[in-house]
Each structure stands twice: as structure tokens, then as C-alpha cells.
Length: 424
Image (cartoon, rainbow, N blue to C red; front, side):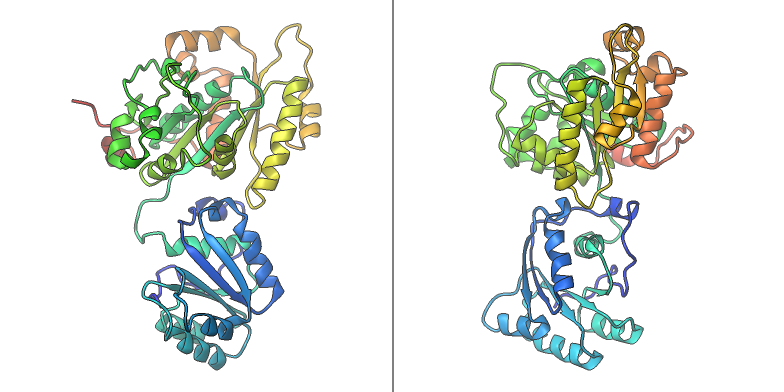
């Protein structure tokens, strides 16, 4: 059995909406669980459907530690073995000693028990157990335990992805995504990358007044080359803390992608930058569904009309079933108050979709038009405007941070310098 990790713990606290935000996705590993009770088996089965466990291959068996010993007498052990034991201390330790005879090097063990005893905990760690979960625990506690096994001690936090998608085409979702990324990077002094996923018609390059020769197409069409250095060369610097992975916005090729086409790129970005804003086009394909369900945070942008209401409700219903252990998406009503246009009231819209909007952004053709034509963000055109304030509040709601005062060097300055270094 693999030696105990720094994250091993007895009696992990119950997960909540704030703690679950720091759980990194579990890598592509094999996990086999040997349970004694249907309750623990059900928790592990439920964890399998969580987005963070998407890459893991999990099998659940009954029979506890004795069943595990029998199973591995003539079979190789997986990356992680989960053992539930409701027995006495000596019984559990005896079973683990027997299991250790058949464990391959590198196999890690998580023990689930009911005894909250520091002496037992120390005995388990001495035997190489990586994690000890004391019942009762929930789905997020289990996922967190597995995730921590593969998080390097002292390493930088895994980056968070924020997917922004419109309930309908033309609702301004890309504009919101770009301004959100700008607000995170500049208002919170956090290294941020905006990823334009609309390869044929993306506008991020226009909105940031950039025309980079390389971008996301180079990454997605050459997955064998993906690493941090390669992605580094594809980034275009917008501000000190904000970088752009631009879409080619050309129609000289077809952009048909498989479900996992962007997995490698997102994984590389997550290891190297704290905030990744995904500008997701309004299409419903296997890869867009995978990206929005797999994102750490979701922002759905809609205008207050009937088609947007229907689409937003359909999207929210689908996302609720696909993300059962995550917080609810952020809903933005954009372009509200357009003169002479019949609109659904904010209260009626919220009631129909069962979600209160995080922000209601008023229609302002002059402000948005000026920003778009100048290749600027809203706060750069009118920093004191109500819309700039609302976008700043959205950044705070998504990141959970308050705005920080500007300084000459940012918290992530060394990382930013590496990721978006000036080209020679």
C-alpha cells in the first residue's frame, strides 16, 4: 500500500457549497470499492456520476475487506482501493495486514469506518493507508478524499473554469464572458485566460483589439503537442493579468469536434492559470455539453423574452441533472429595458426558471457599441457606469472575492510572466 499522504484525515468535515469549489477533478485512474453497507455503496455510486469523477473508472463490490483480500489474491490491484469496515479496531487492522500482502506498489487505500479514534488513525497511517473517512460522510467528502490523493502537496491551486453560454444566439453572452474575464483579471489582480470556443465566428479578438496569428485552433488540431510551453506560445496578452486564446474566425475549414476534443487543452490550462473563462458558442453538441457540465462555474446569459425563457429553463433542467453536487448556475438577464420591446418581467422570468438572476444588465446601445467598436471593455469606456459596476459584482459572485487595490506586482506575477511573456 502507498504511504499515508498529508491529506489523510479522520472524520473529514461534511462538504458544503464553498468547500466543494476547491475539489480538483480526479485523474484517469481505476478505483475499486469494497463496502459492507448499502448506504456507503450508494454514496460511492452517486459519486461516480459527479463531473469531477468523469475520468475515473469505478467499480463497487460488497463484502468489505475480506472480499478485497480474496479479489486480489490472483489479480492486480487498481490505483485506489476503498475499504469499508464497521468492525472492531483489531479486526480492521488484521484485514489490512492481509490485504497489504497482495497490494501492488503505488496502490492507495481509503478506509471508511465508524470509529473516530486517533490511535486507530495513527495505526492506519502506519500501515500505509492514505485516507480515513469516518461515517457519516457525503458524496463530496468521498470525492475530495480521492482528489487529494493526486494533488501534489505545496503545488499551486488547480485553476477554475467558468463557462459562459447564451440561452439564445445574439444575447451578448460573448460580451459578458469577455468583460467578466477582464473584471477578474484587473479588478482582482488574478491571472486569467479567456478561451474563445467559437472557432468560426468568435469575437474575442475583436473585443480585445487583438489579431494573433495563432490561437485555439492550433491547440485543438494538434493534441499530441499539448503542454504548457506549447499553449504558452498560443496565448495573446491583453493586459498584465489577462491573456486570450483566440479563435481563428475563418471559414476555410470545418470545425467538427468529438466530445473530448478540448479535454487536453482545459487540463493544461487548469495546471497553470487560476481562472479560465470559456466563451461557449450557442450550439448544443457533445463537446459543448461536456464543457458546460464539467465547468466549475456556469453563467447563462439570456434576454427577457419567451424564446430565451424556454431555452434557459431547458438548459437549467439539463444542468441540474448533470451536476447534482454543484451549486446552481449564475443567470444574467442582459439587454433589459429595450424601448418599445415587450419583455417578460424579471420576477416572472425568475419564477419560470426557478432561479433568481445574479444580475440584470440594462440595454445601452451606445455604451456597448462604443466598447465593441473600440476593442475595449465596458469599464475601460465608462468605469463609473452602472453596467461596469454590475459586471464587477458578477466577477465577485463567481470568484467569491472582493475587489483588491492595484499594486505594481500582482499575486500571480511570476506565473503571468511565464504564461504571457512578450514574444521576441
